[in-house]
Length: 174
Length: 444
Image (cartoon, rainbow over all chains, first blue to last red):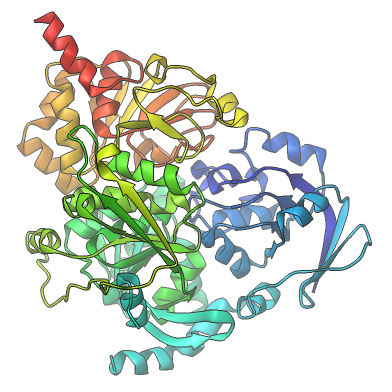
């Protein structure tokens, strides 16, 4: 699977999920309708999106997705066409939510992220765990080997469903 | 190998080691509410024949928007309501409800050594009971309801020892904000914070919940405090009065990935001035000169500004951090016989807390002071209902997040303990409770 497209740089750390999708939009019983409200909680969110129309890869600072557990943050990114976030680190809950929804969470050192902020386009070979910025040299990154399958093809719940007999046996012997 | 408290609980819940350092971790309890549960419950219904691992291991409630504020939130509530009824899940509907992190412990649903998850980041609150409790996303929660397990990377453990004893005017809120300021807003990422030390053991259960509640605000997976006689007495007094649990302790010479020691006697009442909870300073102090310009621009503050000079537009006492009976008593002690000068909303953490407060006459104190006394809800903490801020307005709040827009687009939030919020509500600016006492002396 390849994720490629233009870059939306957000050169700040600590983008929290309230900024990604404000709580007053968390009123649905499905994952739809979030994309149009992406970054509405971010003071300069509308301006950033307007300056980078059609971007599909976010490059940002440390601790992206901190705060609320709302999976709506991943749904809002997907709904707006974003397929990957590149950052030096992610908050734990968002990190898992990204994997479970096919938003590729790429962790790279701050210096590399700083360079990628300048890129116009980025192409990510998800299976191969490499990316290229503006056709340059490949840069390697590492995904969680288990969760990689969920980001590539979904199936998190099916994976757990198949574990039920194991879980029941464990619980019986507990 | 000598183990931490967290290690012992983790080891007792690992069903299977998985590739990449992951583990299949059994969840003794899944807590469900109307905002994050419906999509997962519906996915299980559609894709897995409505099959749950064990409905008895789930407890559900309406908490965030209670009662519904519009047709959309009514559908969220109704989805959880009908799902809980269909599945035979314990359910706390409006009238008998509360914020999940207040209701679940007060009913006695969590005991030491348990594992608990919820689609809500402040689930770490329940670590106060000596449980491993963590917030997760909707899909992960669905997995826990379907298969009884989460997939997790084993977190490291940071031992945080609070020595000595807190000064009389310092609260668990001041302590937890100070811990975040010490280790950093993301300093706990990848860790469980294991709180210990004399100042922690001296806290009652509600105060321990306030301390653990904000572990997530340091990025931590959760916080945890070993069960002791305080825990046992608290649990014995709950409606469920659970028995049969075993108190776990860290081994005396357990090894920790990180250790932090904080002098409890140096903790001061604090208030946040920035846009994350780690950006806080003593109430009697000033905005630091090295404060990030971006935070100050959003908050419309300048370096060196006296915190007690900052005028406010609203005050809020509530949220899963500070809405329990002890918090309300602390607010009432300041508000008794006083008048608030800005709109002030006081929201109990559960209907049980509300009833207890009314038995004690606290609701009269609040309403005599001109505050709005509400039923239980998450309320304005997350900007969903019951007191959302207007853009450009400033609120002193006993809640947990001061992110841009958290309590309403463009709203500004200062986090503090309930007594500081109450004093600020009276004076219309950030204020110390001592100022109210001093004012009374002068007036007398």
